Length: 77
Image (tube, rainbow, N blue to C red; front, side, top):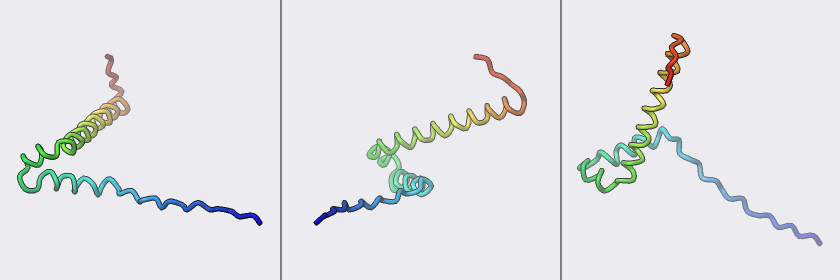
């Protein structure tokens, strides 16, 4: 008699879309006393600052690419 064991498939948790996370982060940092929240939630504050830094760098690169592509401006280092 052949007995086959089936492993239970683990249910994967659905990941939350990132657009739902930003309002929650901003609310947690800005609700109540913002200065106390920034001091007590330093890791969240740092990650939010790194996200903003990345977004601004990406935007600068995108704008720079726009000028190079459409106007033929080349930037030599």
